[in-house]
Each structure stands twice: as C-alpha cells, then as structure tokens.
Image 1 (cartoon, one colour):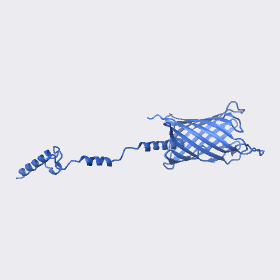
Image 2 (cartoon, one colour):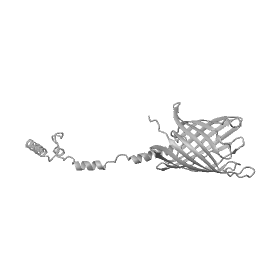
Image 3 (cartoon, one colour):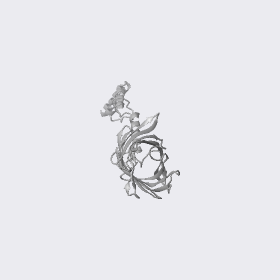
Image 4 (spheres, helix red, strand yellow):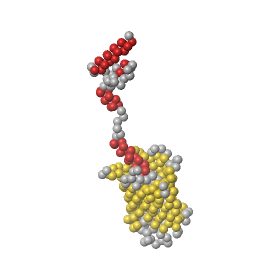
Amino acid sequence: MRTVHTRLARGIVFVASAAGLMGPVASAPAGDITQAARPATSPSKAAAKAGSEEPASDPARSAESERDELSRRATDPTASPPNFSFINDFTLSYHDLADGTRIGENGSALKFQPVVPFKAWGRPNILRMTVPYQFSGPGPTGLGDVTIFDLVILPQSWGRLGVGAVGSFVSGAKDVSGHMSGGPAIGAVAPVSKRLNLGLFNQNLFGNEVAISQFQPILAYQLGNGWSLSLGDLQWPYDWNRDRFVSMPIGFQIGKVLPVAKQPMRLALNPQYDLKDLPGSSRFKMLFTVTLLLPEKRP
C-alpha cells in the first residue's frame, strides 16, 4: 500500500509540473515531495530583490574622495604627491628700519616649487626644490637663494618620519663669502584622526658665516570636498650666530583641490603676520599658491 501511495504522489507532482503549476522537479530527491513542489521565485520578486541590493559606487562621491585624498597629501610634506607649485608672495607692509624710517613700498616675489616623489634604497623619497625670484621690495631684486632637500620616508606605527638632507645655493651675483650651505633635514607627521594631521619639519643650513635652523609646524584639517584648513608654510628660522629667531610668522592657509579642464589643481590663500620686529623685515604678507597636481604611476 505504501508503494502505491508513493507512486500516486509522484504522478501528481509530474502532472502539476507539466501543467506549469510547479517548478522543475528533476533535481529534487525522490522522497522529498515538499521541496519539489515549492514554487520558483517569480520574476517580480527577483526584480524586487535585485533592487534592494546596494547600488553601484557613485562617480561623484568617488571623485570627491579622490580630491580629499589629494588635499590631505598636499598639506603633508612627508606624503606629498608629485606637483608643480607657483607661490605668489605679496608683502603688504614692512617693519620700520633701525633708524625709524618707514618703508612705504610693497614687495612681490614668485617661488617655483616642484615636488618629485621617487623610490631609492628601497624606500620612498620626496625631493623638493624652491626657486624664488624677487620682483620688487626694499631688498635686492632678482634670483634668490635656491633650496633643495630630499627626505627618505620611514613609516612608523604612529605616522611617518622623514630623514634627509637640505642644501641652499646663493646666487653668484650676491657679494657673500660663501655661496653654499647645507645640513640635515627631518620631519614627522602623525594622523590624529582621518581629517587631522599634526607634525613638525626642521631644516638646518650650516656654512661659511651661516648657521640657521628652520622650524615649520604642521597642522592640517580636511574640511571635505577638497577643502583644507592648515597653517601653511610658516617658517621660523633661528640664527645661531645671532642667537635668536629672525622671523616668527603666524597665519593660516585655506586651500581647495578642484579640477580645471579635467586637470586636478590646488588653489590656496595664506595670510601671514610676522611677530618678530626685525628692522626692514616683512610685517604682513599674503601668499597665493597655484599647484598643478601631476598623475602618479600606479603599480
């Protein structure tokens, strides 16, 4: 009797399947009639399930993330992308001369600053050169001191450490006893959060009648959508021969990475006020930077 019931059940399943009332039963086990009789998922349900899946990545959001990453690296001297920067330096006021004479004229200079990351000795390196040209102001015009440094980047558990050397070359037109100086350079940057970086960069130049250490504090906060707020290029040089700081600027830099004719660029504005009242030195200046961010070779 049991065999008759089993055969009868199989016959019902076969007839229902042939009539289109149930899904295919060829793969169902012989004794599992319930599983064989379960309806297949309808097209409408399949479409609804597909619609509930997470959508593909948004190109606009991806582009914004790339701009934020470029902005973060552009404000970090230990992780800078390859770039060409043109820094327009406008001095709007000067400290009075030693005899009390006021300096009424303004000053303007242009700095060309290429940055070239590369790999050597099995480590990432960052090479940076600064070529200044003075157009106007109380000091001598023309080509200024050319500075070049190379940092070997050493990743740490807390961030990045950069160790290398820096050299400065004085124009041959200047009447000085020595035209070259150099020394060690070191920098450290620690990410406090995904948006905030803190660090310090130090360059040391020693030569004939030259003994200067420069300190640059690093603080950069990413505002999102390519915007950043940082300290900018605040150099505090300490003259060991005179045993004092010769410049103590304070200020901030607001910058943004954006595409210009599909080319990523960074524009930044950096007002600075010098707290050090050195006769004839800059008091208040405005730096406007245009940076061309170059493509990188991907592995």
